[in-house]
Image (cartoon, rainbow, N blue to C red; front, side, top):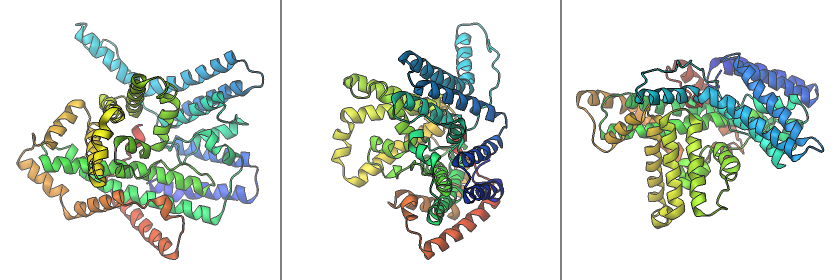
Length: 474
């Protein structure tokens, strides 16, 4: 089930909110309210594949028990460390198998083939990737690590912890929340009309971003990336469209998650902070997918020593962190290369890049240069293979493009409809006002505007045939 579907909007969400507020109104104990949210979240998640719930529950149960062992009075360091290791092995073991088994075995088969032992030496079984496994695995595992570090209080019961891991607003696409940021909210939440209204407003704005902006830009990107011979202008237009699509698609779902959470009394972190207004790659990673970048920083980069063990170790830690960030996105060489690409840029900026180039430029050239670099990175992220990424880069720099097909493609993607949609995307991406600030003070004019664009977006949803969700694969 996805947020941008009639099943969610007209059935699941109204029924869930109705049941939730009936329990809140009748003053049910918060643990029972949490149990209701958990059951609803399992129903939401099980809509894709019911047996995926079993895998999520095993991850939840393992980390809950390990957290209990770690936080037990009088627990020795040996017991605490063993429990932590078990938590990490089980969590990453499931993630590794379901996400990387086919990729690794395929690589082994290719290596054996190069050694002359024939093709398909091992028969690789097809493994279905559970939706959102990367998100809930990192979330559950961070709890155990934080309890081991003493940064989070131990959870009181399994009902509360299950609710934390399975919260449907952020279950399949984040933001990745940490237990210490919602522990008090799981025990006691405030509900008010103003809080519900701001949450509903953020959800609507996210929904509009997804249906109107992300899907419109995505149609252009899809057409160009699937073409055989885009010319230079068309290739840049398609890359820019994907630049818009991936931001509005992911930011929209993060906004909808924050809005849904607030409608039920939860406060989640803002996952994006105007990333395309960044003036360096370091600045970009402080603004893009904040919950993931801070997770990698706190649990991997700092865990490896951060910048405390000398300059060369700092470079290594940056490089390996971004390599694993790329690998987190999926078992493809394109994601790995994308991670290495950004890791190399961060290392370069740490040594001389920002001082040599960024700091000498005015604000606007800094912003343009950063966006160009990010767009070049998105090409390899979007491409199905490294060869395809290099082919697309060649087209962007004038070494590709045909005649007949390119003319047909240009007539499609440069139509008035797509030109207007791309212009609107550009305006919203580079203007300074964001949804979270816009809803802080709701006026009758804003409420009317929200109602109108929401109705328009719902109508558009029913008429669209192109409605992908990019982060399902992660």
